[in-house]
Each structure stands twice: as structure tokens, then as C-alpha cells.
Length: 427
Image (cartoon, rainbow, N blue to C red):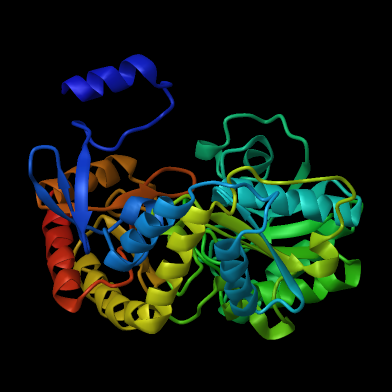
């Protein structure tokens, strides 16, 4: 055990998990690579949990942070803040929500917490619809709407949460149906559920479930849900903490795969927009955002330094068409991984979009989750010089692949080759 690991254990909660048998201390990064304290170099296919969106040590972002820190680090939302207003203007326009208002937070958890506050206040209801296999953060309210047992440490809740079908396409009671029938069955389930309860405040959903293992429904499910929700006056919250900013390649926001009936009422974001800086936020229609009748501020949300980073990062993303790169390179990578997976009895499915790819591992010849294999592949990939993540619903048996969106084709090929070798270690 390293001395730093020993010190970590002495002062940190037992539930603060670390990857790897011998945990890794990352000291610096550049582009799509990072280095550890022993000087080993790794290709990064996880980006600090989908947070290093453009590249490590992106010069445009580090320059913006340095220059802003030299002028003013903090002022709070009690004063006018030019970088915050400029980023809010850009996010409001990009969101697709009409007459949008933006509130910045410091994390995705806090963003979802704020969205729940807005929805329950606007609707005067503490009932929330959420998806099975979902994850929305670690606050008391966010845990209470998380449909993933591994990330829900308490059953106590300030909300009454009702879980609906649809977030996972290839497992569950409707998995055998075609896409159209699958959507119809999930809508019927929602209609039936609403017949047994008072009208909820909102449905919150990740268009692609992140911690749940990059699972998603067929395109159009949430548009079909929206028809039901609108009849009951129920709001739609799209949790874009992991799916936003073009990571899926096909769309800038995940909700756009379900946009037939318009944008969500509330959209939450975080992670990638700061490229490692602590930024989260909520976008909502003005009438929803303005429904609070008491004062509210954010001490650190909208910090001049983080806003400067977000502006520089978003500009780089758009100017270099990283959404298009995610579509092109991600498409190549997922096909390469599907070919590799076809040769392994442990791989049940390779799924995803753009640079958001999951490899689900099972015990050979079954559909039984195989978390031991996932842990072994994680270790083997590290030994080969590749960092990936893991997740999944009932058991942590999905390898999560989400590199920075600037990933180059040779790096995609290199990562796929390392993963192919790692998968051979488990059969």
C-alpha cells in the first residue's frame, strides 16, 4: 500500500470508493492522456467520469482560468458577473427551451436538487416520476429519486418517488418487444401508474443512463411520455449531466432524440461544460424558474473563474465541431468494440452513441451479471495503459467508455486494441 493510500484511508469515509487494487494517483494530463505518480502514461477513456470533455490541460481553458484568477476569483451572485451572464446567454440559446432562464450551481447533484425544488414548488406536489436504473446525484433529494440500489444508501426521502419502465431497452418485462411495441407498453404503464396516484410534479430522466451503464430507450419514448405528461400538467426534467454538449454525437442534447413534442420544461447540466472546473446548472422556462417566492443565491455557483473556463471550453467545443468528432470517431470505436465483443462469451452487449459506450459483461452462456469480470477487465486495461470506468444497474458489470470528445482515430484504435486484450483475460 502506498503512503498516500494509507493516508487516504486514515481520513476518508469507508464508502469513498477507489478504483483498482492498487489505487492510482494521477499527477498530470495532456490531450487524451494522463500520467501517474510513478510516471506511467495512460490513454484516458473515462475523463474523470465524463468531465474532461474536450482535452486535458486544454490551453484555451487554462489560459482563461489563469487570466480570470489574476483579476477576480470570487464575488458571488449578489453582484453582476459578466462571465456568468455571457455563459448563461449561450446556454439559454443552445438549450432549445423558449424564454429560458439559467441558474448555475457547482455540480450535477446540486443542479438536479434545484430542478426538484423548482418542479415541486411550481406544481405544489412532492411526487416525482423517475426511471428504473437511474442515477441523479448524491444529495438527500437526488438519492431519493435514484432507481439504482448500489447508489441509494437510504430509503428515507423528502419526496414520494414512483418508478416507471423504459430506461433499459434490453432487460426487463418489455425487452422482447419491438421498439414501437416497447414504447407503447411503457406509455401504457405510465398511464396506469398515473391512474393510481395524485398528479406528480415532474418526470426526471436521463436520455442515456450514465451510472446505470449507458442504457437508453428507443428514440421517441420521452416524446410519447410527454403527450401523457402534458395532459396531466406534469413537467419533464431532462438530466443532461452526462449526455449534454454533443457527447452522443447525433445530438447536442440527449433530449433531442425524443424532441417530437418539444424541449423539456427543465434541463440540468454539469460535468463536461467545465472540463474539470466545478460547474453545474439548470435551464428552465421563465415561469418555472421564477416560481420561487423566497430569496435564493449561490455562493459558488457562477464563480467568475469557473464561468471563464466554461466559456472557453464551450467555444472550443463548437469551433472544432467536437460533436461531429464524437459521431465519427465514436461510430468507428463502437463498431470496433462490437466486433471484439462478438468474439467473447462474456460480452452480452456493446451499446451507446458517440463517445458514450457501454460493454455489458455476463457469465458465459447466461444473462447473469458478471461484476467480477468487469473488475478484472478494469485492472487489465490499466495494465495495458488504458483507463475506463464501470457501472450498471443490478450489479456493476458494465464497462463505461467515455473519452474526451477530441479523441483521434489512432487513439480510438489503440484503446480498442487494449480492451480486446483485456477482455481475453476473462474469456
